[in-house]
Amino acid sequence: MTLTATLTAYVEGIGLLGPGLTDWTSGQAVLGGQQPYQPHKTILPPPALLPAAERRRSGVIVKLTLATGLEAIAAAGLDAASLPSVFSSSGGDGENCHAICEMLASDDRQISPTRFHNSVHNTAAGYWSIATGAMTTSSVLSAFDASFGAGLLEALTQVVVDNTCSVLLACDTAYPEPLYSARPIPDAFGIALVLAPQRSAQSLAKITVSLTDASADRLDDAALESLRIAIPAARGLPLLRAIALRQEQHVVLDYLDSTHLAVAIMPC
Image: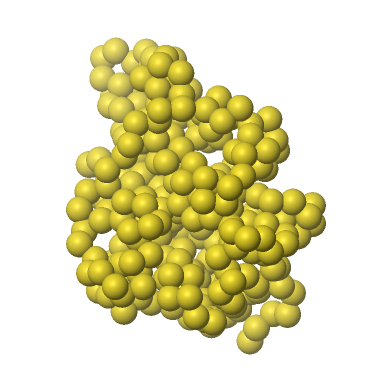
């Protein structure tokens, strides 16, 4: 069964960073089948836009969000300060969560202010505002393994209802042991999408999204499929693969247990 309500937008820019995927330029060659996928640990660039004090305090989720978001917005040729934003993560900064749990389990249970402010749900959105100067609306959400799909629906809704561009920043970070045993996210991964209501010279593809109960698409490459399954933000990889192929495609993305996202992709 396919539900009929749809949301349509144009993808204007993409940011990508994860294990073996250093940016969208190299990532689209891998996803499009021109280069083999070679996994390696995610390399996070320093958050150069942040003032020195905030740069020292920033955690993995901030570095990941800034890297992917700025890449997508630069490709779209837009000003980051002008864009409404949607931040989506299944659980926030895993390393910071681990450090706080260690402190609470020790004799010295006084958590540092830096640890605390990096633990709040909207940490990445706050640092994004400092780095880019954005004073626009910002939504921050989490939906466990459905977080990429929830973020995509929220960003698309902004584009359609408000007739405005929006940037989706979906990311997840790794949990050290012993948290890893309960939540086995192995590495940092992020996808950023700049979405627009009208086609422009920068448009990469037109996407139309609806709900479906069809099964989510899997990736042919076993290593990429393992990445898609392991990290919630990577559930968007079939969409990026379809854009990389530059062919009219229909893909189904993971969302809720019995409801997924059907995406029609038309290259521009």
